[in-house]
Amino acid sequence: MAIYALSDLHLSFNKPVSLYGVDPAADIEKPMDVFGWDRHYDRIRDHWLATVQPEDTVLIPGDISWAMKLDEARHDFDWIRQLPGKKIMSPGNHCYYAQSKKKVRQALPEGMEWIDADYTMAEGRAIAATRGWNLPGDRFYKQKEDRKIYERQVGRLRIALEAAHREHPEAEKIVMLHFPPLTRHATESGFMDLMKEYGVPLCVYGHMHGNAADEAIQGVVDGIELKLVACDALDFCPVRLR
Image 1 (cartoon, one colour):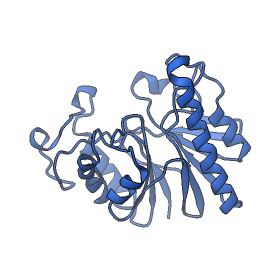
Image 2 (tube, rainbow, N blue to C red; image 1 turned 60 degrees about the horizontal axis):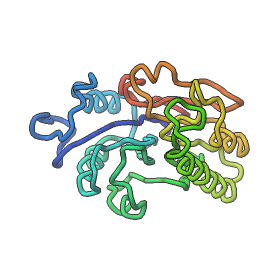
Image 3 (cartoon, rainbow, N blue to C red; image 1 turned 90 degrees about the vertical axis):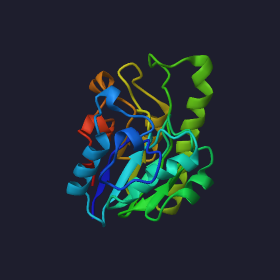
Image 4 (cartoon, rainbow, N blue to C red; image 1 turned 30 degrees about the horizontal axis):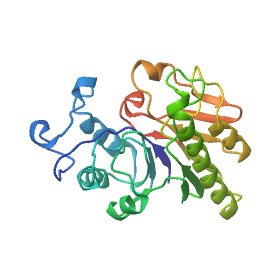
């Protein structure tokens, strides 16, 4: 049994589809070809099938579907369901359908979990998640628009880690964020402070693509391994974490 991660799938199927035989003209609502992601769902499928076993777990921290409404996202969830392994998902900035955690959980097929400001257990490890947000000091951060959201997201990660530590104090913790916990311009954050406080050894995140991914902070920082797991940064292949 192993734990893998892959984020930012950016799926947009407009009807139920199988893993094979997707017709981009008829089945895709928002093609990713404009970003150079030609038939990226086929690349995800092929790498996933070659890498992940049914007994494994895959973490998917955000931007799973372009859907605006939950009924539309079901098509993307069903496509992911056909891939092997247990899936643990958390929200990203484009997950507009995820207004209600309860409703998302009710919509998920068997073998898929949704966590947000809470945690779940996988392979004996506590997986805690929240979306994250733009960080103070980052070039995209705007004090007036972002401060409250940032502070709220830090608080949501504390809720998740507190619960995980209280209920499974000896378990290794892995944090899933969509936004990075550090950037070249924001060299500290409340997310990092919390992970240090709770002894988190690993944090996976997505959100950064193209040239931005080249500037991603990765490797061990203050005892925490940071890993960018956005699809295009990993050549659309789930990466093994544990």
